[in-house]
Length: 133
Image (cartoon, rainbow, N blue to C red; front, side, top):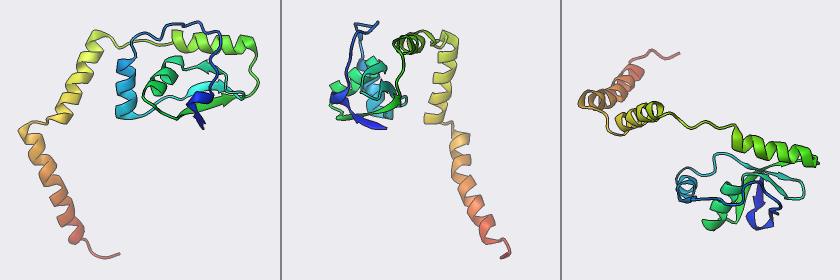
């Protein structure tokens, strides 16, 4: 659900410093918001402090949020901690392989470019030669 970003109440957070969020801001600009923030029905932020701050700095008037109905203080804190702990960065090898695959998709070799040109032509030809159903 979209909610007004300036209506979100940020109370006592574990994370006080959002750190460098330039990369997150670039990601939001390029891909949009991939993961919603989490708030109570009273718009109190539970999780997503960095996303919220990045969206505000980008001038976003609204942000995608999941609304939890009446979570206890304990549950809110558990969710905040869980979201910040249960992540694992890609290893250097995983990141290198992913970037190599992305580069190949962005800049396919000569044979791939030829195949990508011919394939739609072949599909069009074979569609025309099919008998009607």
